[in-house]
Image (tube, rainbow, N blue to C red; front, side, top):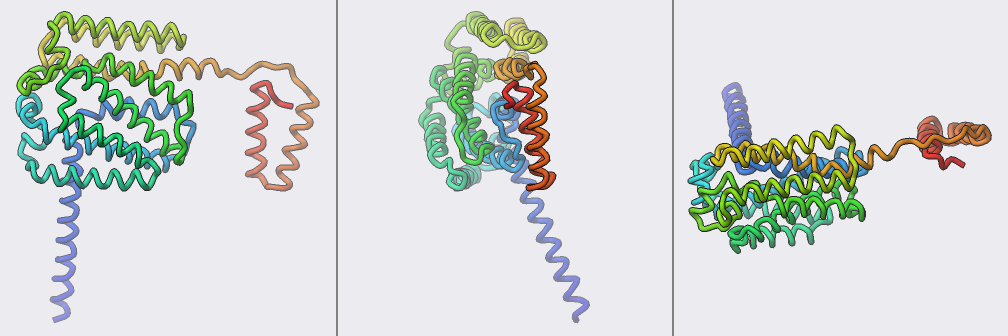
Length: 348
């Protein structure tokens, strides 16, 4: 009797584990399909900006910030695809709802669950106000139909980039908001996307027209819409390379990526080609964001100062005191700080 009950119990436990595993895999696959298009369009630029603007090296804080950003991105995408089913049936049939992978009702349940999780998460990390502003914008964008007009669509998209990066940077800094210089950099990147974000709309013209959306590729003649985008791409590229004087290799790279996107958008007007051109735009965007930080990094070279033997003696004495009092760990910290100060030309 006992020999029969133990295998039965083990079998039930294993069956429960398999079912739980399958549920987790299904949910993760759903999340991936909901956000597949955003991995290069949103996640990569935000990660690049956060990496160069943050002074933190805490991997745990970075992962918390990444999870915060991803929860909010998933919430937006689920809500957007619930209200945009007609468009997705035409231009993006692989998405979860039009493909039948999930019903509209289940998608709504998932949306409210992600919304609640995001708000709870934001409360825990001190970003509840930012999260409330974000989801108010999500409702206005989706249910309020602000995405129907090109100007509000681009402006709110830029605000989304700003909020994603701000939240990630705040998490990486353990609750401290970004610095003034980082905020200025975020405003610049938001302005870049607000004026060039229509690049994403060329690939969706058929679906946008079907639901009455008024994007620039629909409102303007194709030639004018495409060449105006090219002018903006090269205007931003020329302006920021002139302003920041990045390294030559970085300048060549950003011009090459802008050129690849420009050739794609102006040589082939098909939506299939526009998807490839949009990929080049998404490669150009984070490199454009990096021009300023790359320039700053190159300008922060150690200053060459005359050797001051008295300073070296005082430094060696302090290192020995630190080693005596605090042990080798404090000594190394003291040595690193003093060496950095010395090479910056400010050692006493």
